[in-house]
Length: 237
Image (cartoon, rainbow, N blue to C red; front, side):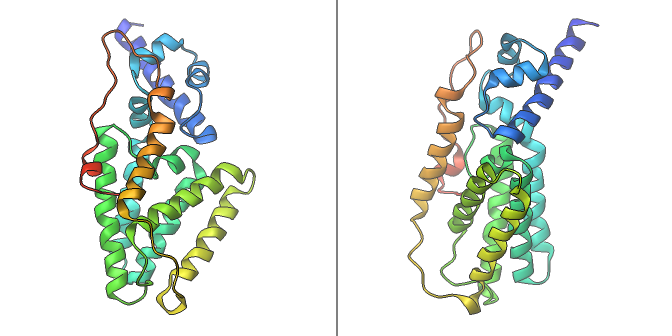
C-alpha cells in the first residue's frame, strides 16, 4: 500500500470511528476513544484533524445537509402547519438517532462547510415560521429562537433517555407541537432575547468543542479565533 493510500485509509477509519463514537457519546466524547476504535494512534488523528471542529465537520457535513433537506421538505408542503410540524419531527428524529447531531444542531462550530449548511437551514426555518404565522396556525408569540430552545431540550432528553430515546423524543415533540397551535395557545412568558440565545449556543459550542476539548495541535497549527459570520449577524441556527 502506498503512503498516500495508507493516509486515505487512516482518514476514513478515523471518520467512521468518530461517527460511531459521537453518535453514542455526543460531541464531547474522548478523542482517545475515537483513535482506539479507528485502530490508529493519537498522533495520526491529530495530524488529520488538528481541531475537534475539523473532525466534526468531516463527520457531520452529510447529516447537516439532511437538516437542510428537512427544512426544504417542510417548505414544499402546501399546508403551513404540516410543513412546520414535519420539520420539527424530522429534526427531532435525527437528534434521537444520533447524539452527535443532537448536539450539533444547537451549537455553532468554526467549520465553514457546517456553517454554510446551518445558514441555509436557518433561512428556511425563518420562512417556515413566518408562513405558519401568516396562515394563523402557529401561536403568535413563537419565534425562531424558540425552535433552538426546543431542540436544546430534545438534545438533553436524548442524552438521558437511554433505551427509550426514540419514543421519548417523539412524545415530547408531539406534546410541544400540540401546544404550539394557535387555537390552543395561552399567554406564556416572553422568549429570551435573540442575542442571549445566540450567546448560549456559542457557549455550548465552546464548552463542547472549544480549547479545553480540542485535539492537541499539530506542528505549525494555531487555534482558530474567528467568529462565525452568523454570530455577527445574530443568526440562531
